Length: 324
Image (cartoon, rainbow, N blue to C red):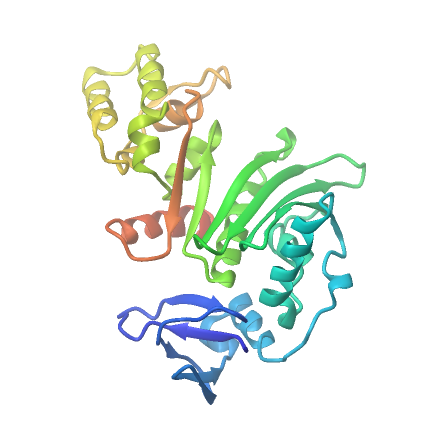
């Protein structure tokens, strides 16, 4: 089966929803490009990169070449500590899914660290025949020191790319690498036709991802430790005026996860306890310096807060806005 790039015909916006490859059947969506046949009642049309731009177009065009990849070449450039039946089944699935376009695990990792100016090593942590793959990627500079370490995974069953941990060396914190890694995850998710990005937000990430439009899940917001840590931090900040304190308490008491955005956006300046002598926004203090954690997503499918969510993401991640 060849690759198909599709567009939902009933969408008013020209939003690309899926990029599917061998073995996956799609609903009868309208295809883009020049017609070149039919399959399962779908009009199959050759995809041109001018329709979607960037990797998605090139990736789709590769699907039409009919190139096969050998199993022996699959894990070139990747450390593979796994063995046995699990690895065999995982390799079989990867080849059936991506073999015709010669997209290897190393290529996936390379896309995730694109535009970050360091060499890297990658390790396959997990691969299953159930369409799930997990990697660890470690950068290294000219002196053999690791500038960053990340973990990433994707699950085609749930349509999710999981952004695991991200550690960037302290002397590189102001170089914008966190934003670049986020952009890369977004690009890879679209390239694979996934429907969401997932984060586990800790430390500075609890602030960063809220500003970037990620929403905590209902469970994470209402039954996790997120609210309690914010309340404790708020109680320790003695310089906040009564109206500001009341406003934040009302937001924390809300059962709507979107309240986290308003907390993150609170501009009132307070003293940082991590960077003595520096003032930071109250939103940053309550999230990045409180110890709070939460799990959340950026959704590509339509939902109640879709426009607001992607406006934030476009501004703070794709737009490269400075983190204040």
